Amino acid sequence: MTKQVCVVTGANAGIGKAIALSLAQAGLQVVMICRHEARGQQAAAEIKTAVSHNPPDLLIGDLGTIAGVQQVAANLLRHYPQIHILINNAGVWATKRELNEDGLEISFMVNHLAPFLLTNLLLERLKASQPARIVNVNAGLYVKGKLDLDKTPYGHDFHSLKSYANTKLANVLFTVELARRLEGSGVTVNALHPGVIRTHLGDRSGPLGWLLKLVKRSWKTPEEGAKSPVWVATAAELEGVNGRYYNEFEEIPIDPVAQDVALAKQLWELSGTLTKLESAA
Image (cartoon, rainbow, N blue to C red):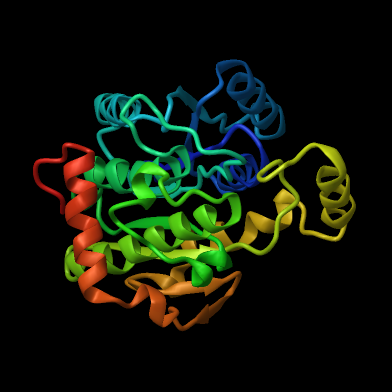
């Protein structure tokens, strides 16, 4: 029996690395998508040391640009005849407005457009490998999000905390719309909040940074936080479950802010245009 192939984005540190380790320990063929080559190699080497009989694969790629995501997808399709699980984990919490080479605000790109584009580019491979699962690692802050499709993608309404919430809302809207499109396809998609994790996401300097470090001591370790994404990705009892949102291990109703069908469809169309995707799902 061939191993299930699982792709994990943002796998060089934090919860992504912990997810990759846990899946490798469970016997899956793990493909780590990492932006930084040196950090990625170090993370892969550490997992290989811990799971010498089942070392992960490493793919270096930048999910911060349209071309970067396209390249990651092309490399995955070239090397993996089957892909059974895609965990969209990579995320950023931007401290200032920053545009990428496509003219898009970086947190909107990484937190929403990258999973949107990567998922769609891999979708036929996932369907051919069914049953397959897509897991979008999200954040409970999405309920505070408010999308303005004329402003948010370009950072015209940028605010560090609000933009993070806005992009996480976009990710849940994407999950809901994708789930609708995937009904009966043999591929499912679910989103989850893994808890408040002690990672470098949102790190700050100065007094606020000192306070954050103090508060983070009470937060979950990446290893603890990885448990629920791994569960959603692999649990037998979740086979066929589609379009749900989990707060760690508990299914919770999707907030009304992310159940706006018209907005979800508008976001999908705009995302397809921005990513130059000819046919999405």
